Structure formats: structure tokens, C-alpha cells
Length: 222
View 1 (cartoon, helix red, strand yellow):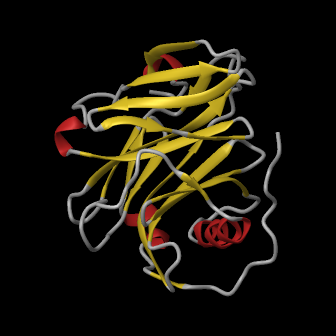
View 2 (tube, one colour):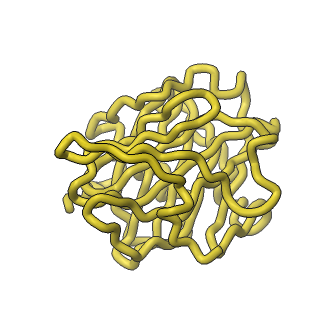
């Protein structure tokens, strides 16, 4: 699988410094994974789109460095960066299987606003026609705005991954054996027990597809 090695860091942008403190004071543990809540301003996810745009190499380097700067560990590589409306979603991984995500608003502005993120470990490999994931994870910011995210690995025969949600199908970004997506939600959609469990539609390179529940591919220690 190809990986994007982080180049020398570009000039730092001003950002709301909330992620650095969240690990100590604002995290929620779900099956050993750290879900981090962040503050955000403006209307909740109004510009979000169900299909993502691919970030340019320059955006990937800039956003990857910004995400990594909020994490305590080192050795991260950029797996993917996707753009949905005025939001950028970054997935980083390490050789030991640790993964981290950052969701920011206004990625092309001089001031990045952190919205959400996650840290956890995913060491398992998927079957050729399947997935592995650490489950769908809710994010709730200080305004009470809810979103859901999912990351994981896709098998070599997988061509696309779509999540069936209450607001329609959400197309995952699929790159070099990894997939990721996020979408707006509601507090009422967060289960009392266990993670959300939407339907996922997996289309293979031979054109066939099947549907299953996301929990069928969940390898997190729940």
C-alpha cells in the first residue's frame, strides 16, 4: 500500500488549541479508543456533502501536519485527506497500527477550527472482499452538534464503500486500502449501549455488491 510520508512542515497556521488539552480533560473511552470532543462555531455542518472531494497534495501536507501537531505520538503517515463542503477530514496512521483523525472547519482559511477527532489502534487486516473497522464513532462538540465518523481498512477487491444513513447514502473515501467517512447526525441516533450500526454497501471491482451491518466488520475491543 502506498503511504504519504510527511514532508518538512509548512508554515503553521493559527488554530484553536483545544485538541492538545482534550486528551487530558475531554475524552470519552469507547472500547479502548479515545473519542475527542471539540468546540466549534457557526451553523452545524451546513456545507457538508455526501461525496467527498480529494485534497490536493499541498492541502494534504498542510492538514496532515496540523493534525499531527495536536497529537502526543510521533511516526504518523498521512493515509488520506478528504474535503466535504467547508470541512477537511484527515486520517493518519503509524506502523504499529495506531490511527488518528482530525476534522477541521475552513481548511483553506488562515484559521483552522477543530471540530472533532479520534485515536485508536487497528492492527487487523481485512479479507479481500471485506472491511475491518473500529466501529462508527459519534462526535459531539460544545454546541451539542453531533456527527459520526468511521475509518478502517478495505480489502484488495473492494472498489467502493457506502454508508446508509438517515440523511442518505454517504460515500466513503477509499485510498490505498483504507476507507473513511463522516456525516452529520442527531443526539437521538447515538445508542444507549454500543456503537451506531448503520448498513454499509460494499461494491467490489467485479461490479458485484452486498450490504451488511457495520458491526459485522467491527474488530474493536467492545
